[in-house]
Image 1 (cartoon, rainbow, N blue to C red):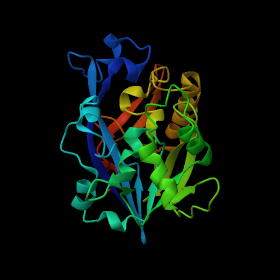
Image 2: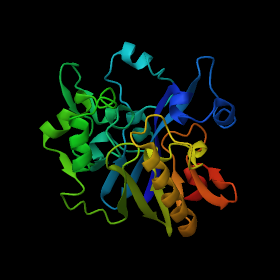
Image 3: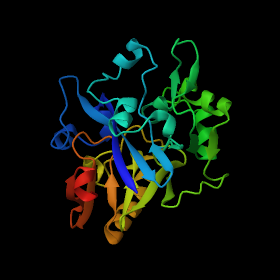
Length: 281
């Protein structure tokens, strides 16, 4: 098995939204912000090469939205979903499976693209099976008012219409080295793939812990639909991470791709942080 970090670009979100009730005087020591209180975040995906399977976890926001829409999120950086995949020597047509941790636009937007004439929406990965959880899918296509602006129909409906949509709780997903943990704090039935690789386990922790700065249990995002549930999930998850020596893979951390975790008298924190290749070569 080989793992490849896929850089699908950066965007900006309000620091207060990303850290909820945590004062800026605290979170700004870990994550800098600009004059508008906006912090730069990665949209980091993961490509898993396992035998004859090429599995992409998350897809970033894509590029089919209008420039005006993307300007709301200050899209920047050199990262590009397809470019990053090709940089590692693969082609989008080779992707066999796309696992969407959840269907918010910054994780699922790249799953669907416009065709060359820009008049039809098509699957970005035409030969792939797309995976989510059935309860999360229903949550997304019938959104609550809080999340309706992040579940975009153009990101979702073409997947279903294509016949490529699969649910991990309804279909045998037959991944030899990937199992799934679920979380309900950030959004309903978010997937967190747990990957067994080279005698280690790496957890794509998704938005339960979007960055190393969110390791402290009370530091949860204002975007979470159930923040108290997120805290419970984080505490249980981080205890297991420490006890079983897992690696955490961060989807939004602007600095670090991966870290190990330690528990101290002050709570959970980073033990070692670095890039994925520093842990798995």
